[in-house]
Image 1 (cartoon, rainbow, N blue to C red):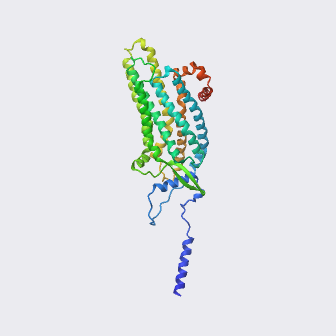
Image 2: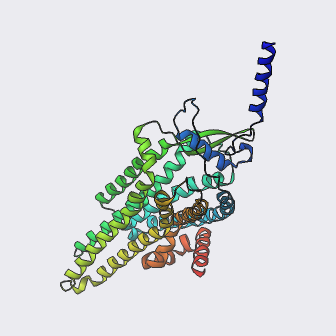
Image 3: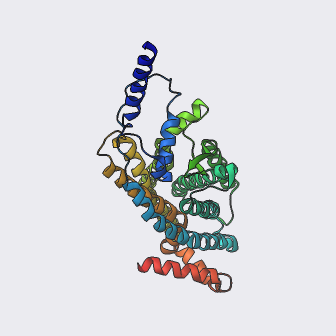
Amino acid sequence: MTTRLCFLLLAAHVMVASAQPEPKNQIPQASLSVTQRLGLVQRKAQDPARPNITMPRRRQPPMCTGPTEIRDTFKHINTVVSCLVFVVGIIGNSTLLRIIYKNKCMRNGPNILIGSLALGDLLHIIIGIPINVYKLLAEDWPFGVTLCKVVPFVQKASVGITVLSLCALSIDRYRAVVSWSRIKGIGVPKWMAIEIALIWILSVILAVPEAIAFDMITMDYKGEQLRICLLHPMQKTDFMRFYKSAKDWWLFSAYFCLPLTCTAIFYTLMTCEMLRKKNGVQIALSDHIKQRREVAKTVFCLVLVFALCWLPLHLSRILKLTIYDEKDPNRCELLSFFLVLDYIGINMASVNSCINPIALYMVSKRFKNCFRVRPNSVMQNPHFTLFCASFLSSTAS
């Protein structure tokens, strides 16, 4: 009798326990998108191994559905912009390099730096943009771990070349004004070749953490194993963990504020030097001084274009770091705004890879004349015709 009574009590306890509802904060994983599933994976990866102790669970804020709709909308916009940047960038930058290579009068220090900048943009366009478009449209990453590390490495090295080249151009313009009684000859000085080599070496070194930080992870989604290339949430060394946490601030300070600060300082010094020497300048050097002023104006235009193209992306990242709270239940509208600004910034940053040749054509008379002086090699080239059509359509709009 006692055994039967114990058995009935145990059966009643099991029935009561099985009748309790499941926790409401659990989300069926089959209904989540790939991006939302990836967010859950990153949350779990960021937490240490949890002990098997029953503790009261904090209620997680609900998942935002707005970002998924925004991603679907910008998926097509980013694809169109990337295709335009790819075509215009290859034609414009290759034409710019051809002009500097074919015209001996264009082989001077500033133009070689501009050519180095164009070559860095060309590498980014050829390697980075097609992979990014595929990554945007497809859910799976079939290119392996090596290419997962190479693509962000090339992108960051290209931006580093742009930033350091703009800084070097600003310093070069100040040096030209300080020594403006010295007439420049044709050719590249040895110190300029060393400077360009240092720019590329330093840009490659600064991009190495990107290759280390990015990795490919595998995630189960609707019964399929998806491979995703991303900045891995769990870094192995203390330096890489610090790099991951401070990456946005590092990029904002070194890859955005540095060229603007450098240009502001040296152009201010250059203006003061020009005002100080204005009365003592010989008339015979007036044409030479005008040429240097035109080059200085061209460099300033390139820096301004860089600032306008990269400002939205850095602004989005910094604002998200400072004012966004992922535990706020009313965070979805702010997250949607940041995501829109982020996609606009990505498109603007891509445009920076192709807009420098157009800016040079609009600002510099020497580059514009080179397009006209060589009709056989440039003007009659079908690539140049397409470049001009792209330029006219962009200016008309």
